[in-house]
Image (cartoon, helix red, strand yellow):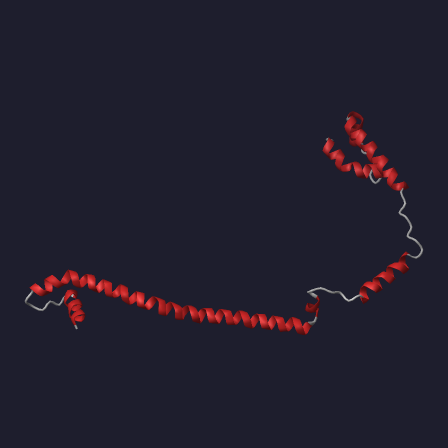
Length: 162
């Protein structure tokens, strides 16, 4: 047997719950460290067997019950005390829910309105700039050509001059 296996068995050996097998006895005779550890365990168990829990005073139960009654009668104070009242708790929950719902509905409505009013002028400005660039490229060709072209340059020129 190894020292680790013996250490696992030591509490039971010291308490007398398990009898030492020949393998355990042989290891304890050859290993001084394990034998010393078992001796310390046995001394500890002997001390624990001699120790007795102190008896409570005769009026311990009476004083404990009186103290518990005092604590139960004492009204707990604090900022969370109101939360124990169900009506207030429900009212707070409803108020909180309505507030959150109003926040999200206003944010959603406000964001779509804001997006529309903010992006529309920018979109139209970009489209107009694009048309002006195309017209600047096509204008010399349109002015020098005698026939009516059907290309996109003609369409751009026609709508820009109206």
